[in-house]
Image (cartoon, rainbow, N blue to C red):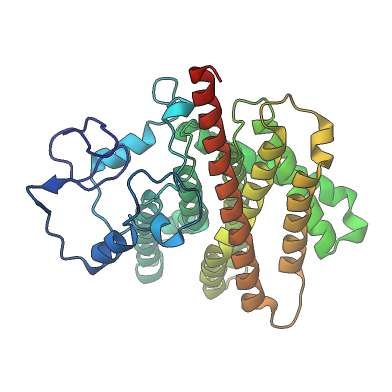
Length: 359
């Protein structure tokens, strides 16, 4: 079954191309699908087949979330990033990726959390508490991370590497932040908290990407999101445990709920923005400390610190409306950097083609 769009050779029985996601045609009409969401997604997905635009089309980005996807499609996603499965830059598509796996991860996490909640709340079995806290803390950060992983168009980072960064990067960034807090213990306020935590994550992210193996903007976005996801999840687990030890079970659920709702626009997005900004500055060049003082990096990092400081500022009415506004702001910048990352790939593809032609 060769895909008519990308000519990828698919195994028999799949409904969508495992490479580009194109829905296969049977006879002269598409397979019947009574899903309203599929029809809507298909309608907004009608873009020219040869289009190479990287302009944002938000409705198209999420158009495959409600489609049916086989296990083979998910399995193919999880094998990218190895020496054998990383595509050449000339084979990478510079159009906006259309992620869908993140939604399945969220549903699975939600079902697991509900099961753990039933075990603890209705059967009063305390053995479910550790799982309840862990799943509740990791569910949304991990879901957001999977979204960034699917948006990594170069497909050059293996998933096992991402898990490594989540755990090691999350722990290291927390420890570095504690060092900064100890230094700044006499002047703790929202600004110093923002500086300490964002600087700690920035140092950790840069330590993972500075050796140029991950040199694309989208790579920095993903590695940063992995560090931020670990930071956010471990921090949430700590706050949830404190709530539990205080004897207030309702506060435990409230902590997990609100930190989960706000997680996509917090540590995950902020660290992702820092990583993307650094990779945008570094490019193919060797690491140099002067890179940290370039305008393209500083303006993003300062913005992240300011958003973090506002997030922690005890302004009346800040929660939750102010946090929601900051979430939206964070994701506007995220999509701007995703677009910059796709343009970067498009330019590299063109340079390689020009080189092949002898220009």
